[in-house]
Amino acid sequence: MLKPTIIAIAMATVMAGAAISPALGLIAAQFHDSDPMLIKLVLTIPSLMIIPFSFISSFLTKKISKRSIVLIGLAIYVFGGVGAQFSNTIEVLLAFRLILGAGVGLVMPLSFTLISDHFQGKERTKMMGYNTAFSNVGGIITMLLAGYLAAFNWSVPFNVYWLGLVIFVLVFFFLPKNEPLKPRVGQDKPKMPLSVIGIALGACGLMLAYYAVATNMALYLEQSDLGNSKTAGFVMAFSTVGGMITSMTLVSLQTFFKKYLMPAAVLSMGLAFGLLTITHSIPLILLGVCMVGFGQGIVFPLINVKVLGNVDPRLSDRVISIVSSMIYVGQFLSPVVLDSIGKLVGSETIRFQYSVLSISLIVSVAIMLVVIIAKKSPVKKEVEAEI
Image (cartoon, rainbow, N blue to C red; front, side):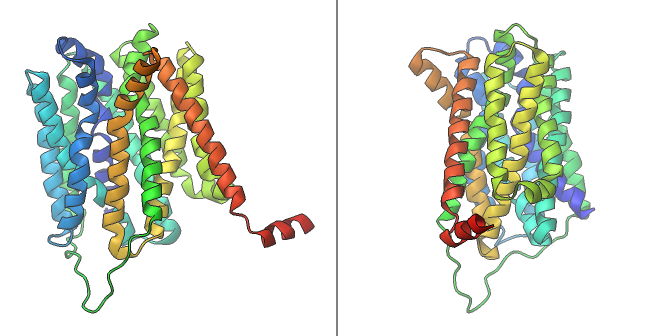
């Protein structure tokens, strides 16, 4: 039961924000006097607590077992997630979302480092892929469920966070109680590679783009007269379907595309946002969000594999905290940055935001390809020319 238990922990983290995104329109109607930006923050404000608490989680691994940290985090998670439905003001709702973020912050880094602790080589890459894949399964289930529950009332979708209690039980019975991590006497202190910062910044930008689906899809469909909150839940589930497919086949894709896998994934996301910019067809919108999912199902597992492979194992918890924190910075900044760009140029439609993302991602692909080609050694080029 170790593998499904670790995967279940990751499922809890992906449910943090996007799970209730189909109900965003109803929440806006319930708190109609509130600033629209505060409504969007219902999805993204957990990130503000996830960031510091992920570093607290890294620190606690030296004091108590990872199993204990996960159990504490899940208890906080359920309280903050379920409790939000009893809010009578937008401020109270945001406060509960911050509590949820604290719980996720404690749990989220460990969902990756537990894989690093127990698996190596291709098995580690495969588990990273499975981690993302089944996180997407959790996303599909919770978003569809939240879209259905939103038909009853704006507050009912918050009950999806009771799933955290199921994960709590799995962890309690099946996750080994490892000893806290302690430095060995006489060992040199490992150094943090600068490449970690670059990877973390790239992860931030990619999450900023990916989360534009969760924060904007309900409003996108309303602006286009294409559906309601239930439709939004169905559409957003397709982004997780795409991610599930690529994550499950990550090792095979890596073998086929080799070093071009990351550019291919980002290109899929760029073309997808381009499609969402121009289409008014639900089937093509489903294709677009599925393509976004294809990309994210590749980029985030690869980022974690790469960053863990570049550092001393003693730094794994810290580097995952750094990268994960920047991912959640991107999640938090997604509506802020995109809305600000729209206001700056006088075009506040979601379609314009998606066009900006499409162009930015395609330009990023071009830069990645230039860097990959530039890294080829002169000797290798001569050998290829002779062949």
